[in-house]
Length: 463
Ligand code: UDX
Ligand code: UDX
Image (tube, rainbow, N blue to C red):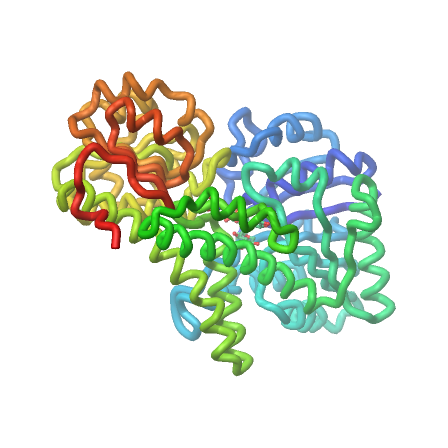
């Protein structure tokens, strides 16, 4: 039996560890966190994160070989392998503020591991970290002089929220990086054996530490780059009467390009993309590569442009003013099937419209609580309404900001009839059937396609 500990019961730790527990019944998995409420929630009927299929797996393993606790020190002492998935937000102060990763929780955790260890251990970086973080980890962990040895591995998480269970059950690849020393290789082998219990061996890649750390940042940067690329082209489509879906399909059919991740929209969100790219940018600058840094920075700039462009287009289309107008935002989550609102484009659009003094109503099937929290003081100016029919009643406009499948099933005829006329619909995810909505009477503004409008709006002069 291996005693596995995970420090950090957030999205990453909380969704990966129960799956490891379900596939490794011989091993004992404990997840700890400083946040008592979170640990309590993991053991309740209402898990702290919404992730399809996860509650079932937690129910099956909880109390058998999966445990949650706030007693971090005790469980460190008992562990053979420690996964660390505490958060690594963007630094808000000092050197590298706004770009570099804030590693204070990481370092604190490393010291805590050191202080409470009475046996040698494998420490696994699960959080996304700047390349060469493991070096600092090793220095701290092996600074004890008490004969204990710590092997640091990098095992970045590639799961996407909303499909975390599927991604972890059947990943494209698992990446494990370690030192080329005998002890490093032994540690890699031990971790490989855990994953090999359900993942084909040829999908488990082993690399050196730095390649593994860097690959995670690069994978996210490439994914985000594709979205910014297609979003950049969506702006051009809107001016030229090309249709972004047709362009994406035509381009993506080339197998060298591939068809995934080419959905144009209001922008990418989530806790990772922005943070990881800024981290990459900072690293490039740190290593004296300003041209490389500028190249990747543009991916973030384009995303900010897309969010701002969407909100500005709403204002221009609605006769250049939204002040006092009720606008229903459909979706607050950064993508469908999650309650996560971190870096959500929906909230960016919301902020921009509030600055224009719009009267905002937000509806979302799972993410309203997080949206309210993330919007902070602004939340008091917003109505949160679970029922999309109520949210859109007497509204001048609806904006689809999250691609929740239920939004394509709504009775839009009924919604149209309850709205102020002319009724506007801005589809930030190209989720709905635009022609049908137009025929109902809506003025429809998709992404990357010319608007379907019964009015001649000053915002859409084709040049
Ligand atoms: C986060 C980052 O978003 C991701 O990029 C990184 O790879 C891992 O950390 P996530 O799991 O989504 O992933 O973060 P979050 O949901 O904030 O969870 C982190 C948890 O760590 C929180 O529950 C927090 O209470 C806990 N934590 C933080 C500790 O237990 N100890 C600490 O010192 C700091
Ligand atoms: C991402 C990576 O996919 C995952 O491998 C990594 O471990 C963490 O970061 P996640 O942020 O959960 O996962 O979601 P993802 O599905 O990648 O979507 C990110 C954002 O991009 C969402 O806001 C989504 O709406 C947007 N997106 C995605 C698009 O706008 N268009 C697309 O074609 C795909």
